[in-house]
Length: 222
Image 1 (cartoon, rainbow, N blue to C red):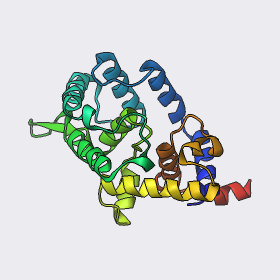
Image 2 (image 1 turned 135 degrees about the vertical axis):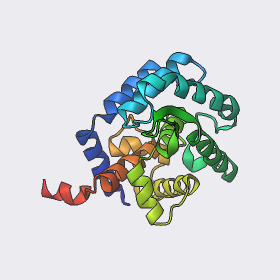
Image 3 (image 1 turned 180 degrees about the vertical axis):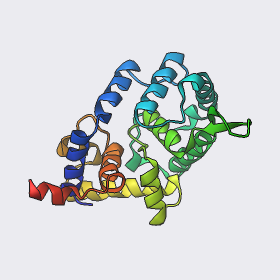
Image 4 (image 1 turned 90 degrees about the vertical axis):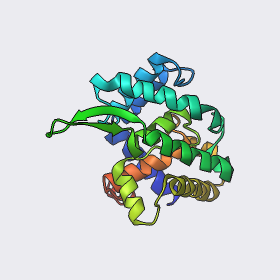
């Protein structure tokens, strides 16, 4: 990934989606920061997750998902890296903690679903819900991802969220070296001031993997 490729992909992401506006509304609702111990904040999170295509958080089961998040936060929030820690600055121990927190949250109940047999199945936060929730909690350190991105990266050998964090960190370091600026200055260079550095990589992945668009080739045709 080059600076130009990242810039082209992030520009398209901003033009093609409504995700910026829903994320901005969520951030405004929980300002100055998302607190999983505040009931209203958990409700805003679940509404935002729905807007970002996380359908496992059904409206009728929001109390269950909210209670799950509160219980998870009681165990994990104090163990996560501080909110001002950047992904590229995390120690190996901090990355491991993020991965373990992701695994734990992914297994938490999000909703109940009635099966044709009459039995009730528990739907969990899952990989996408866990990653996006952790992004809401630590946007400087943890990138979100969706299922197409996860499955494609698994095909390429990225078999865990821990490996994904390492990959994103390496991509950010590489682009910052090419640009000759610190990682934290990349959003300004790319023209995405409201995106954190890890989020820039998610935007690139969404365009290139989820939507299967070559942004730089498209830009040359304009």
